[in-house]
Image (tube, rainbow, N blue to C red; front, side, top):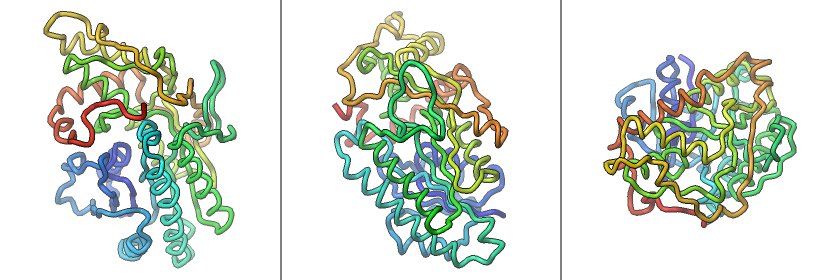
Length: 349
């Protein structure tokens, strides 16, 4: 059975990846620090499953990483571990540098040393896959798309920290020969997402009949990617991607934030109408824009399609309906992760 060391595997994307990988017959050693966004409830279905080994710890703990690599002998490392919310990075950028830059460096160093000790066949087959974001490219105008050759121009502390980690991964390939792969994805959504992000935040506030905050004029555009599609893309890059290469992963679903919010409102009007009979759209409230808010992101994922024959299985319409229904069916999951540190308030003002 193939073994993966997955970092950040109790977070939103990482946990979805772990669930998918174990279901497909892989063994996963799951390392997560269990900060506010790491949630063991997401992995509850794997309790007692010998194909899933959970370890609480930090990717910056070089000794721990070295021990896990030596003990479990993984065939690949998949790095999801990251501080990931732009608004939080505005309030506290230091944590983003510590985890996303310093932590990634420690993980790379330990992985390099482990890889050097593998026999020839295992060394050739080994992979280090780094999961990143389209935000490293900065902001687009009204036209055009990010490609793998778009110059980096990060505009937030979060995206700057991810850009730095991307460069470290590239440097470890070119300097030490470490067999790396990098994926830069667009905005993810789907089950198990921490409710500070736009889609789950809007769903929770709409269900409670509260104001739905929309930054600025609501016309900031993102390419929305259903999380299960993202996970399948990572698996495809892991198995067939060219070493040292970057692959952009997109959902072919550009939508303005205001359109996303209105779409959620329309779905809830059908499946969970407000008691006062008003449309959920009446709850939309425009608030002061995020500092340095990038206007538009859009991914050109043609390299991934042409080289590796991957395309998203979900449209935005099918994905958003499935997502809303999941949150309706799993209200206790949300309530259980809300605590004194976050209660659906705005961050990064």
